[in-house]
Amino acid sequence: MRATPRGRGTPSGRGHPPPFSAPGPAPAPPRAYARHGIRLTRSVMCIPTAMADHPTSSSPSGDGATAATPPVQHRGLEGVVALDSELSFIDGQAGVLIYRGYRIEDLAEHASFEEVAHLLWHGRLPTQAELDALNRQLRAERPLPQVIVELLYRIPRDANPMAVLRTAVSALALVDPEADDMSREANVRKAIRLTARIPTIIAAYDRIRRGEEPVAPLQSGSTAYDFLYMLTAEKPGQAAERTFDTCLVLHADHGLNASTFTARVIGSTLSDIYSAVTGAIGALKGPLHGGANIEVMKMLRQIDESGADPAAFVREKLARKERIMGFGHRVYKTMDPRAAILREMVEDLSEERNARRWYDYSTAIMEVMIREKGIYPNVDFFSAPVYHMLGIAADLFTPIFAMSRITGWTAHLLEQWQDNRLIRPRAAYVGPRDLTATPLAER
Image (cartoon, rainbow, N blue to C red; front, side, top):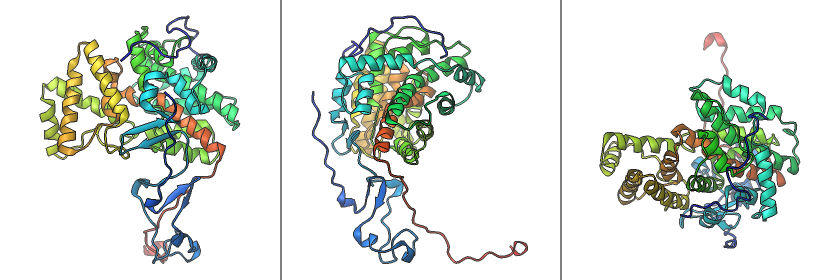
């Protein structure tokens, strides 16, 4: 792994902190999903012709189907294509992830987080001039409004950092004069504002809860560099910056996952960007979406502190029918390509920091899970030891996920509003019918 910054525009770590407050594109993926018998397109549910021929008024289910043609149901919407998107493509069988035509391996090696943000928002990698302009905008927006700083001080110090982030992002709308401006230009500016301020919120609250003063953001350097600096009050080395920047690239977008879908559903009502992102953060807070890497780190630390053999430890958990977090994925049926990149980073960091055990533990667990369960690691499994070796507290892992995914969420919102249609699926009613209300005294 190279340890030099890429596409930064200006060197990291220069400048003084202001007052704290205020190769080429891959081929396009195929679009054939007819085998599922159901497709959601342009954000509205479409059902097979035989089902669509029956009017809702004659439908016993109340959902546009008759007893002879029951609606097709997909639990958790698994396998259902909800809309068309140009943002990312996933081939779960082959282990492929593409952002706007570029494979994730290519972007992780050759593009910075800021370049990927520009790619997602504007559909192309930036020129040097465009990257410089974006970096200037991001740096200018890093300081928090004073009212947000005061809010962070008033929040209990034992609060869940994701709940803090959700609350602070919602509050940002109150001090943004463009909050309800739905023009694309204003929404791009708000996307930049959110991308710049979420790292400041996370770092500031972490220091406040530890009884330390927040560190003002720099007016120079990358997002990765500035965040690590604000978190520790120490300027990170090139290897740490490069590693963390790559993590941000890997988490920037991932199709229509739960939080992104939440954002698009809210956005489809023409609510504002802050409302949609607040909802997305709420979805990401759930342990089945964004919190798995916290549980992975708990498991690794338990192995380390007890001196247990990692393979035996995992086999015992499997024998008790316990879930091993960080394995399996709704889409990937092979190795998550992001996990493969992170695995190399874990090995490099382990060697660099004389902490080989974290790589050994992770590899032993992975081998047991693949050999005995046929389940592969996902991005959460290897991101946990990476963040741990960077000195980041475990309960900040999910907020850092949001710090990266804000670029994908806002890109999806921009795409949604470009050709908006209210997202309104339907449910098959399975409750009782023809009940009559008895008087209250007789119930």
